[in-house]
Image 1 (cartoon, protein in one colour):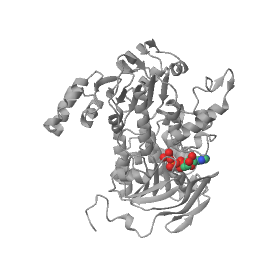
Image 2: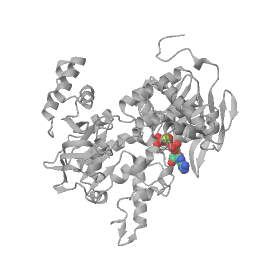
Image 3: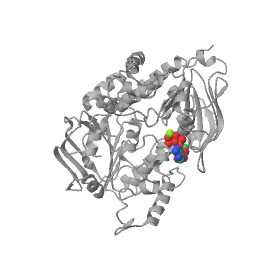
Image 4: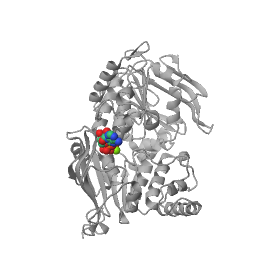
Length: 546
Ligand SMILES: Nc1ncnc2c1ncn2[C@@H]1O[C@H](COP(=O)(O)OP(=O)(O)OP(=O)(O)O)[C@@H](O)[C@H]1O
Ligand SMILES: [Mg+2]
């Protein structure tokens, strides 16, 4: 026994050869080999990270393991015995639980009803509702989840919905837990909480498979790392590997984790002007209050903030998806408040929505169709009432190549693309028409490091073309990489506008509502920075464009 590592060195993982083994798993979709003879060992007491590019085959492999897909070849063994799952119920009965990349909850049902629905606790019925309720309470207390069994799922914030998914798996006392990109939709604080939960599940002797594109998280909690590329295992890595090494193993080439960009050539007159705008949320209360912000052509302004502070509503108001109750919004001098969304789009506004599953594409439409979703009825794709199908197809072929969208063909429905590739479709569409203003919420959520590198460069190119770029992101790394100015939003207002070099500490404090000056004082007394770190230039930037 040694004590040099921060992982448990003795424990359930030492139980000889126990656990779950995948041997030679192969899964094809038509001519596409999504999993090509994959071997994977999942052991109790370990967090096993599965890394790989968008479309590498991670979710497919996990769906095979969970009985959602049938493999074309290979075998699953539990404690050395071959098993076969026709459906998730059988996988659950064998002790496997899964938290999906796209939640599988029934939104109009309560938390307890969702548990019963999964048949984790007997068959449906009143008695079982009672059992489910008390199970939710018991597990909530044990893992510090604070989930109300009677809450209706659709009313819960994303982070809590995810806990419900975890509860579903735990209600069945799953020994093997699969987390498919659980952190993509969480705030930094929720991520910390989830990581703590995964650690305690591991320490109880459960086995965890963790899929994420955030290498920082991998390095924080992985006991084992397996990397897949284009359907095959390409290697394993130690948790001590650097982010750059992991990125290279995933993508097969060196990836630049920082964005190289020239200083912004900011145009004089702002293009987007938000003046004293208030917006009411779903409950009728103001969620954006008397907010001022402008974005000039040639600059990237990032709105940083903890999710739920009015960022989404502000963006939706600019797009005409929510009414502006007070104030005005202009684009290049023209009032755009309360236009219809289609009119806003036609006015040259590009939009990458936060919830792409709901708002970004039509899943049953093909890749080619989705790539012209806003403009198929306009030149060059339409003349009169006739669509130019050849134009639509050649556009799709070009965009698929440029954005490296991994799809079997341009005629594949977008719903069968991998999560990250669905997002690339939306970005490719929005970044491929002339824009005055681009608004992107969480633009690189769920995309792999190689794609982030490309998309960040593409966003900077959009800026350099003179577009006003407004990005909403909860990822401070992304904000630091892209922003020319950072507007920190808290409770419907802008707390301050600062330069891109502002420290994480100061940004973190501002995101909690602390004003800039006080945040600086607090950050400097807390961390006692070296003298030459005096934040002189961002003081000069406050409220101004550089
Ligand atoms: N139901 C399906 N029909 C056809 N092709 C599919 C289907 N599901 C997945 N694929 C294809 O299989 C490949 C692997 O997809 P998968 O979802 O497993 O990738 P992933 O590694 O999870 O990627 P991401 O990181 O983007 O989530 C992709 O090329 C995808 O388009
Ligand atoms: Mg996936």
